[in-house]
Length: 342
Length: 290
Ligand code: SF4
Ligand code: SF4
Ligand code: FES
Image (tube, rainbow over all chains, first blue to last red; front, side, top):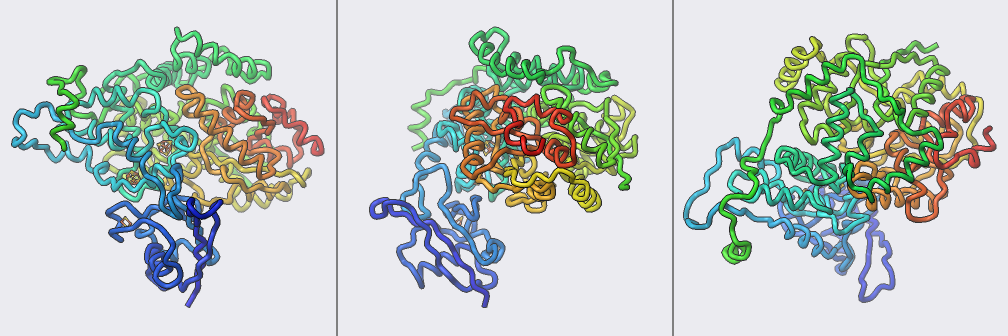
């Protein structure tokens, strides 16, 4: 039978001065998953190897690891699909500290989730017995996002988290979406306001890693896009992200093309003097090299057609969260809710 | 001679802060007898920003562009990988969802009398170059092999993710750009950040993080011994080149559009390719190829 080498990251901070890789050679039985393979290694070669697992069927979310550089679920992936020239490299998921071997400390991931109140906040708790019904259409808005199994694959590979661990991260933003778009939640507006602040929804670069690694239909980047639509719909525009979108819309709707001289200043805010000064160095550098955008911005030929698109934006808006009203009705005392949840 | 003609979608940056990209593309395509008809009536692709406000408006802009190319009877050539990724996304959405396509077409007809039929093919410059006949021809036309130049390919997010919008054969470990670099006689450098984000999309929202991302890319390429980075997206180019002096750390890493690299090997001069407009001057590392 064909052989495969699992090259596995090993590190026990209590014992090892630094991490190292250990190779395990095993038979590539047809049909086995990477998790089956690891279990076999543990049972027959090395019982000290540490990794997380439970369900074995892509439900519990505990077996995420980096394989050949990208996060995936070990129990959901066929070993034969991973072997490149007979080798599979396995590392712990990224953006978190290693506890031992492939086991990482997930606390930052949980801490981030807690920031967005990952539970339903209804408009009243007066009648806890009451059913809160949803139509199918209402449920469909959150159908995909409720499939998240909290495996942290997205958190592991998120590019922004690599440079800033304060960033909410993809799973947390997806979780926020899950309640913003839930017809039974009464805090949509507050939630939107919270995640338009620093470290929130506008700090995502759209690198696409989260949606690519996500083993479920949650696909965080698509949800982030929907949150941003909700932000625009709710007109929470006192932030760089929303101003950037508005500025983009303004210039494209006027001329059919982006005016790069206008957008940066519009994004940081025309009256934000420090930020405007911050734009100067790059502007000057580009000017000196003759790289600045032309001062006269030319329109496309039939700009009228593009203008008509932008005059009908309201008609095109497809999905909206149910009730994003400013100053949610029946504001509930935070503490009383957490108490009743416990 | 290969007879090929494309509708050139310039995108906004090649008409604005990255005009050298357009100059280089035109010069290289002329050399390779690739005829270009610039789409002067095409609008911005929306860059993934318009869709954050209103996805259907963004799809309409792009459906209109596709319809324009279909009217010309030409396939589209993109020179910005962000435009390419956004176009692919719209095209997937329309082609895989006949009901939605009909709805978009109805509206498109109303505003412009146009219709997106679904026959247009959309390719980035890199894909066109990698087409069988073009690649062979290009190899034969190399008059200035870039021997010894260690070039790191910087793919750009939209080239690889999400996978369903990627044109690469193997988006998690692609080799398309490396093939071009090799064909020109240069040596591709493998480095950890070649598929990472340059940070540009958040430069106005969180400059610190944006430049930290660019810094990671430069650092990774520098440690791997790259002389320069090759980009397919003028936005990556802006963050890595125009912002380089503000990126924390000591870098002097020239950033070169892939069209410029091709042009240089085909015998065009650095000034003809407007390489002198880059903030980080590549003349030093390219002196042996002058
Ligand atoms: S798309 Fe945004 S949230 Fe997702 S991995 Fe990239 S930066 Fe992180
Ligand atoms: S969003 Fe996807 S990748 Fe992220 S934790 Fe949930 S299931 Fe895992
Ligand atoms: S073991 Fe439960 S998801 Fe893999």
